[in-house]
Image 1 (cartoon, rainbow, N blue to C red):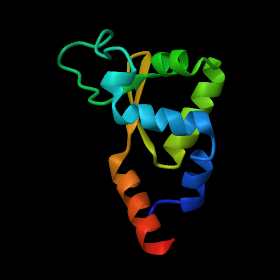
Image 2 (image 1 turned 90 degrees about the vertical axis):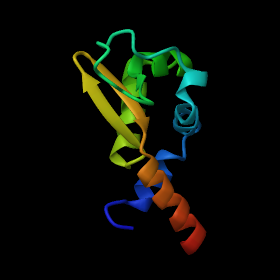
Image 3 (image 1 turned 45 degrees about the horizontal axis):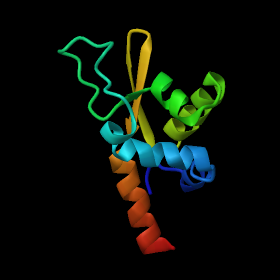
Length: 107
């Protein structure tokens, strides 16, 4: 799989909290508060969730959550959108589809 390190993906998914974050981000509107509060109407973060809301849901320190999100982003599982002081994370559906294809064809 081009540009995807499969081992990094599996390492990122080997932690229950990180796996839960990915699951929750599948349906952010069900799992997190509305996300447009800090943004002007013309800015779209479709599917993105603010780090603070993720931190509140997992009930871990900000540094731990930031580390988890960074690992997941480096593995290609998440995309980050920064606006001002806020960073929003959403699933990288393209990478997830490639991982699903890899599992289906190679494992």
